[in-house]
Structure formats: C-alpha cells, structure tokens
Length: 335
Image 1 (cartoon, rainbow, N blue to C red):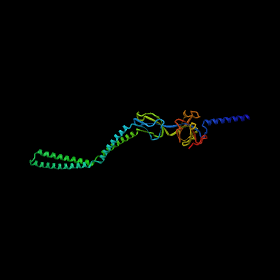
Image 2: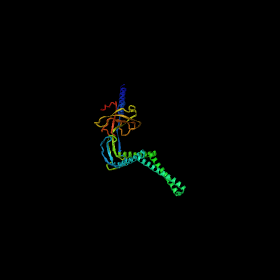
Image 3: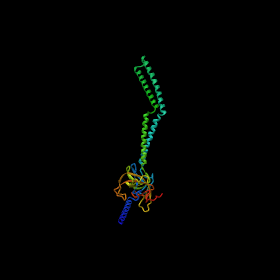
Image 4: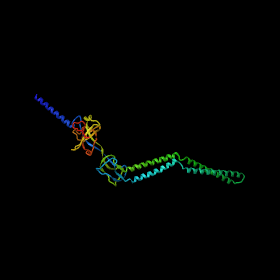
C-alpha cells in the first residue's frame, strides 16, 4: 500500500513538473500568452524629383526634423528661367486668343467700308466711260482700241469693288470658330508647360514628409545629382510598430484592437502601451532573430502591434516582450 501511495506521489510530482515546464516554455499563462518580437520603425530614403546641383543641406545625421521643414535645396536658377520662358509663352498666346475672340477693331472695319465706297464710285465712273465709248464707237467717234480700254477699266473697277466688299465682310464676321479653337488649344498646351515648370521649380526644395530623425546624409553641397539620387535617410517617429509572432494554438485568443503592454530589456525602461493592429492570415517559420522558448522551426503567425506612446527608448530592431491584457504578469500601463 505504501508503495502505491509513493508511486502516486511520484506521478503527481512528475505531472506537476511537466506542467510547469510546459507553461514556462509556452510563455506563462495559456489564456493570455506572452509574445516576443522586435521594434519595427519605418525608414524613408529622400531625394529630389529633378536633377541639378545641390546648393545647400540644412541638417546632419542625428538631427530631428518636423514634417514640412526644408532639409535641402538645389540650385534653382535653370528652373526659374524655364518658368519665366513658359510664362512669356502663355502671356503671348493668351493675348492672341483674346484677339481672336474680340474680333477686329472698329477702326479697321470703318477703313474697309471707306475703301468699298471709294471703289463703288470708281466702278460707277468706269461703267459710264465704257458705255460712252461704245456709243462713240458706233458713230466712229473713238477707235476700237479706246473702246476696249474703257471696257477693261470697267471690269477692273468691278473686280476691285468685289475684293473690297469681301474684305469688309471678313472683317465684320471676325475670326472663324476653328481659329479660336486652335488658339485655345495652343494656350492650354503652354499653360500645361508652365504648370510643369512651376512644379519642377518647387521640386528643387526637399522637405521632410513627416516627423523623424535623420539616419544618414549621403550627399554634400556642390554635388551634381540625378533625379532620385538619395540625399537623406529618415527614420519616422510615427508609426512605431512591433513585429511579433504567435503560435497557432494561441491564435484564437488574439484579435485586432486588443490592448497590450510592451517591455524592453532596459533596467529602467518604462512599459509602453499598444494594440494589435494586424494578424497575418498566412503561417510562416519563426525568424531566427526572434527569441522564444519554442522550437524555431514551429509555424507561427506574424502580428503587427502599434505602439501608442513611442519615444526615443524604442530603437530599430530592439527585442521586446509583449504582454497581452489580462496576463497575470501584466501591470497597468501608465497613462
């Protein structure tokens, strides 16, 4: 009987030890597992969208910048000249379009009408001389040549009158709709070129897209840059994420929006607040950089945790421990 009791006690001790080891390697409480991961801070490489000579750099490595602050400038004289040229073309074509839409000046039309009246009088006089020459020819009062000359003068006067009347009608009608449409199209084309010139001029200024810290400064003043050449590498202040991994048995206990506490290995490191923002739908092998108590070949699901109160204490790649809300080892995060 004593042997049976002793054997039962040994079994209970073994079972308890196995349970403790299992819970230890699983990160503690099965209901609220502890996760491990690394800080993931986004970086952006900044450069100019246009080529040119680098005129000035206003920041260096380690400097903090705010969104919209000017970080560097190109020599903008070539682009200012392009803008001035495009503006002059726009002004010229705009004046031409206004001329087409307004039509001819009243003075030009009045002058054309005077010319018509003058040629009408000349045509009437030429016709009278021609008829008189025909009558005199019948009486042998003029020669055939003189009569022919009078007829030619009459025809020429009528033709000149017809030309003057046509010119007057053209001036009174103004420009054709096709001419106005062409002038509008030419103006639109030059306005687009002006907009491009203005955009290129503004692109000679490099501004910070968001708050951040400069990690690298790749160029110096005086360098000739091609479009897109890296000038700065900026580490963004927000968002700061934690990339962590969870085993499939614990996946059902997590959901987007779940509150977590993030802790670093620093002795005086404060806990950070965060929440789960994304759970990958696809399983993968645990990355070797993640320190967990499980076998590294186990399949896990990647999490993206958004840090709500980041500061300079979180650095790129820093290992962290993520404690889910409700864990026995969790303490309330400071507000």
